[in-house]
Length: 186
Figure 1: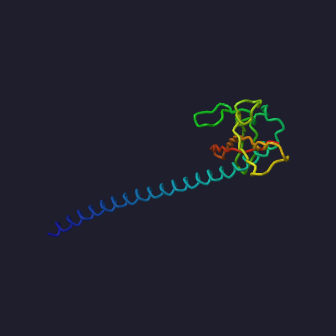
Figure 2 (figure 1 turned 90 degrees about the vertical axis):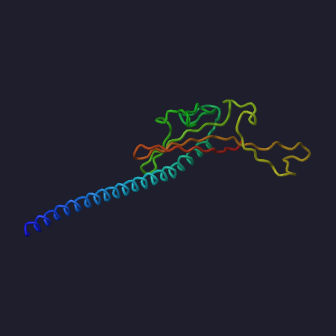
Figure 3 (figure 1 turned 120 degrees about the vertical axis):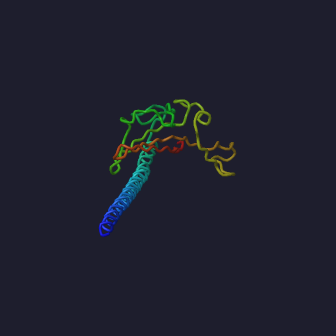
């Protein structure tokens, strides 16, 4: 009889070992899955931070482009790879097809901010600004005139310019931002 008790104890020890190995394997796989989820969360947080940083850096490009538009002396001629008096061809995403390597750029932290500007006019040399350009009209309040007894002066207009900013991040990622800026007529 003692032989049989020993055999059954040995059989029970083998089953226990098998159950422990299966449970350890399941726990190992669960730990690996949690580690992977943690890694994905960290990568996602990093990508969001890069995107937010690129959007903030694009403000520098927009402000720099706006100052360049304000300082334009002649609007009807293209200037040094950053300004076009008429809209340029666009790609499938609505972005101008320009050579970004020659566009003016500003370094903001680890990001490179480049910009191009297009005047929202259908022709380079204007003959009728209100019909040939996208304008923002500024109406004068009722009862104001510059000279008594004359016709009311037409409203002042301000031309619109489309600024496209490209932000290149430290990992080669690119973020594009477009905005309309206004330059008043003088």
